[in-house]
Image (cartoon, rainbow, N blue to C red; front, side):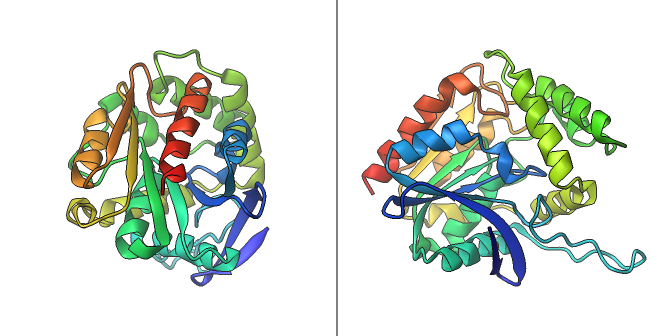
Length: 278
């Protein structure tokens, strides 16, 4: 489905019964909503949630900001703008407030949403994310993978996704190569836009630090992080939890910058415990 929100078009999908607890999933840098595993969403639905996942601006089938004139600069935006996109989508859905879960850049957007629109966030779950650029900095290998030149074709895009997953993914769990390959192929076929990913990355860089804003929150919060994450290292998760009053920190040894299938039930249960009490 498509919605007009905050001046852009947002592609989204809803799961679960209308009476379920509203829950918003926000994906990370360059990733499309299909990166949220439907099996994981199913666990949340079975736990009583009505779940929405969506393509961020400059990803998937939502609005892309490539200028009509190739000589003109593309407009820049911040994570605050992306948080306002999320609030706008909630307006379309008729949700005055919702439980919000974000991963990586999506965690940053979720944090910004809670700071900018505190009355609209029932609970906040920030996964493998950070409150700002000074903590959670990537290893050299992870940064090199992130900054690699764009893939030239579909096969290279798929191969690049698998290689990146090997570099930044979980060392303590077997890599699901079939799923990584399948999602990478589907993402390429839906929309391949490396320039859009670059604009999202710029939004991260120019958005500054959210630590002080997080300290002013009164929202129940859960912070989830892999102890072996090379892309957003564990201190990013620790700093996020330290900044939010009363936040719970849940870490997993062997987890990198991904969501390994074996811990989906544990993560879904932790989210459900938080949302069920608030």
